Length: 188
Image (tube, rainbow, N blue to C red; front, side, top):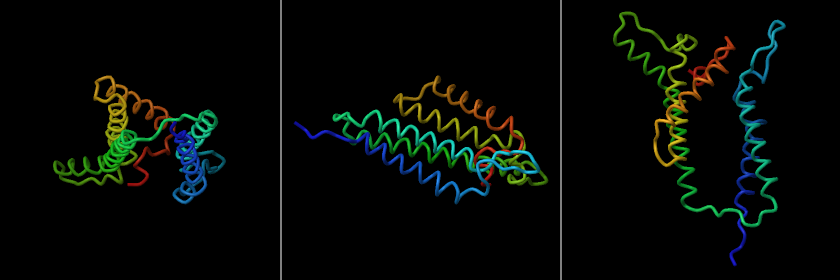
């Protein structure tokens, strides 16, 4: 009889350590403001809000995984197919983040080929249309790519789901807040 696998417990513990590191080390060192800021009596979203919320979701999911799997002696054994799946997800995520980061400046340079007076993307990063270029292209690529990996094939439904997800994120995070820059515009 093979020895029981504890892979879900290990994954849960790794994710808990990662989330705690994000919340208490990486996010405070990487952001200029806190979760919320009070400026002239008005509360504004801080730079740390979105990543802290995301890290909290990872932490809660990890704790739920530990609690639900703690007594299960026969958890799945991690094999090569699992590692290739994770590697595929990482490649799609990294490529999508690169597209998200460089699409806006790239299209600004393309626009400069047809303009007498050059434009600089850094000055346009809060302008409607320009501020959405990288977020839309990279976001649609990331979501549809992950769906394609999970479903083992690209589909029109996956692409439409990705477009809808990105539009909803823009409506939730960009439209209501005039001083919030969508990723990656804060870094450009």
